[in-house]
Length: 517
Image (cartoon, rainbow, N blue to C red; front, side):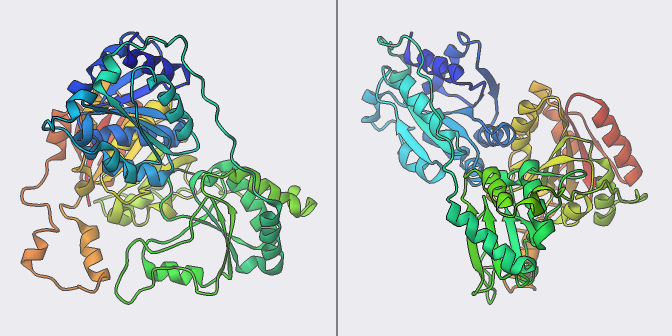
């Protein structure tokens, strides 16, 4: 058995089932080893950002890692924007990054680069495997390190893959540590703040705290104390809709966010960070809370948020333990008709989302009203842009759809962002993934036009406009999608959209609908 084969044996033995890959020469022994391993499935992406984005989506659904296979430093560099988002989403990913054989590196061949140095800012753990004899142990370490919601990058020199693993007998098993329990003093501090000033207290939820079990515990606390449930502006996965407690989403623009936080003297953080502005703006604060706000970390990032909230409930005794968490009731907006605009889209979407769907929202300016309009839709999971690197939704949907093949995946995508990684559509077609893509086409980077005003430049001329518009030439999404194997159509009215969407729901494969807005 060679090193690559021992690596695959270790991955499969420890529950890794998917390898999203864009391989090159240095990774050929790993590719060949896939044929000998029944446990790990290979999925090809035509661009490394699709590969790393798919791994992010897979982990957001299953809370366990997929593996990526990337080709040396430049291949990894192509995937870094999606890795940035995955890092912010606290996804579990194991990157296998090929490198030159050890004896070849010193020759400074064209693809030689500092892979470790490039990987570190986008990884929680980095290691280069020194030999075929260590690769199995290194792989087990990488998997174990990734499981709390972290990114592990393991660099695989080519000779490490092709040399014989002479001492390999059985793959090592990983041991995963449980999250550290929250100290009782922290729980008591949170309870004290809620008892003293509940209506002036916010419980800010993020990360894995935005799952139904945690939301219900927090909602019980809020119902008794008068506290307000907030959710981070951009969370990796929020379970929401009918039957699930509602939260107020922290606004993206600075001014309404600051106004929201003026209502609170205390913020309890549950798997969330203290709120700050997405960007710095002239004459606007970077911290969204008031200077004298008390901030208590009830459950740290990657902590056991459910246990922390359960412990907090217990401190209130029967007052909270016996209360039923208030949840959203199904409330679908009246369905509009006629030509499409943003308000009609939001109202239509409130009734269009099917039960148990996975919705990835990168609609940006078109979707300004989507959050509120869909808060009481049928229950669904919502993915959002955790790291702010745009173009994430199309590739992340690959992993989500593979992780949950029995669920419908819906991508709400702006046309500008969609052009960052349209190669994802090819993987949709090859794998016949059950994904509906809505492309909102306004032929401009409208978010950047808005940001020009936010940074104090409301008036700009034709040269600036050429960098903010994408209408010369207009992108033909129907032709582009069809060329990559995904059936597509263009609609003009709400009635047309509803019909095309219904057809997509009835079909088990991918489709794309171009929506003018």
